[in-house]
Image (cartoon, rainbow, N blue to C red; front, side, top):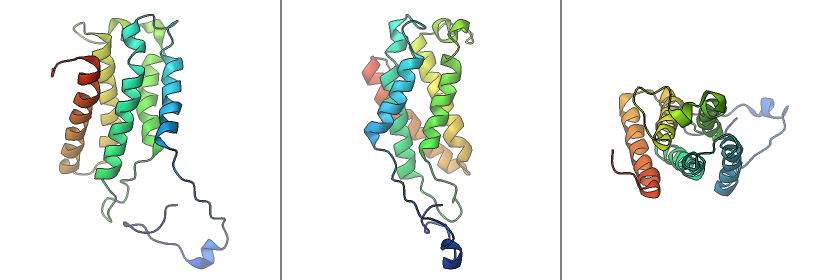
Length: 173
């Protein structure tokens, strides 16, 4: 349960006395970076992926995912009609879980060859597209109106340009 407020109701004291109250603070930014950075480090192992461009995408993916998650948490707040707009560390796990499904099968060489794409593209661009798809799938599925979806789309475009274009030297396309 979460503290009452923002559309969430409190439970009666007679019911509360039957339970223990534990308050867990969310992990720090550095802890989250270490957790998911380590997962992607194991996943994009140089033995599985000898291509250096793929293994170098680990840090930008972690940084971009945490940035979009933090921006969504701050911008799309819960209200009485949008009480389910709570974005926890589970959303990060869903984004990275989707990436792990594709990257966890190096024998299919989807990322190296981009074999599921009609035209050949660079593996970095394929990973960025995969990351954007997983962010859309995770965050947009919770949103209930087109205005919020537009806000998220703008945030995703901004974070994509900020984290990938500059750090990897890509142009706007």
